[in-house]
View 1 (tube, rainbow, N blue to C red):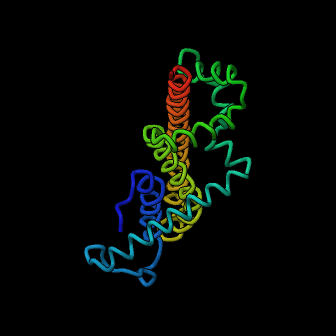
View 2: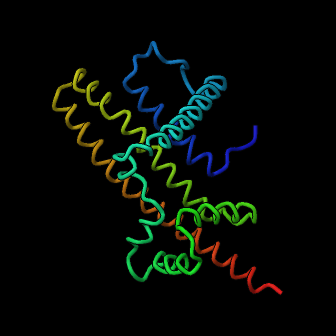
Length: 206
């Protein structure tokens, strides 16, 4: 099996690993399908389970983007991000460049991503995208687990502990959400920067 790329590790495997770890905290031991990841066979089962779970979270996050409440929390359209960019940062320059290209921000983003992949110049932007997907998929997992965790700890410990778990989850979700939007902005900034440089090189080529 080939090694996981940074994109696959951050976007799929790591969120899946975290999700499986926390799920196993509230499941009875009879539900465990492996005893210890120190065993090679069990480690392979856990690896496959974590990767599958991460892929499922990634798919769920894309499906939830059709829900306005989720989209407003964890995803900012390219055009909105450029319009709300503080003055003096590159996103402000990107906004002027997009206007010069006479193109919609989302369409130009898709074109830039496709062209940079063809030119093998997508790595730095994709590193930020991988971090964003890790945070977004982790946020999705936290949303899915928040209520079960709250109920579980309220039953096994006390209502106060359950409420503490709920409050902690909300604070953590807020922090993850802010970090995710930051890295999405950095990804867009880097993508447009490299693409603009590529276009200028092509125009100036003899």
